Image 1 (tube, helix red, strand yellow):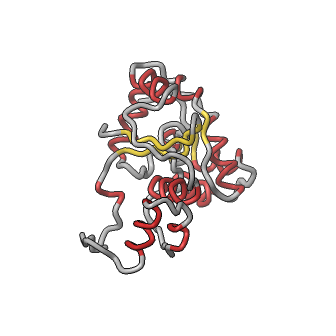
Image 2 (cartoon, rainbow, N blue to C red; image 1 turned 90 degrees about the vertical axis):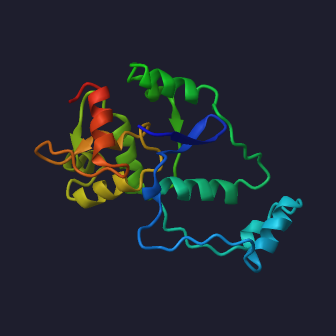
Image 3 (cartoon, rainbow, N blue to C red; image 1 turned 90 degrees about the horizontal axis):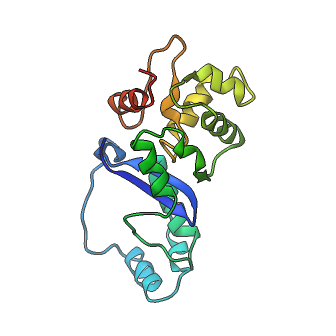
Length: 198
């Protein structure tokens, strides 16, 4: 499956993804530099104790939803400790239980992610899909309050920053075809097989 990366604010999960190079935008050059004028100074000021310094950095962050959640957490949680840890109490245990076969374990994880009202409603509907079951994008649109918003339901899946726990992998095309998945259809298939749907 790859590495499952988690981003939490205390005991609330705000981001989850699988490690994958596809998180980078195809066609974009990635350059490694030692210093970026102004930005490097602001980052140094941040680490020197001015926790508001990074707010002066203008950003365009078109990356994957998890990257956006991580960036927002670092940017707007200034003054809070941001730590890289191997395990997040309760959340890591519940995810381990999920992978050990208790597919209902992830239901006990509290989540929060920014998004428009329709996306919030769609994510809430996704959380109600039982393991071993699927719903179509049309079903999600209807349960989110707008039966005609099938494409918006697909966008909610694509913009979901908390994969697995907000189970967008349980959303399929009308007729049962798996549809797309940000981490690859093979990962979606693996998850659905693990949950007993396939």
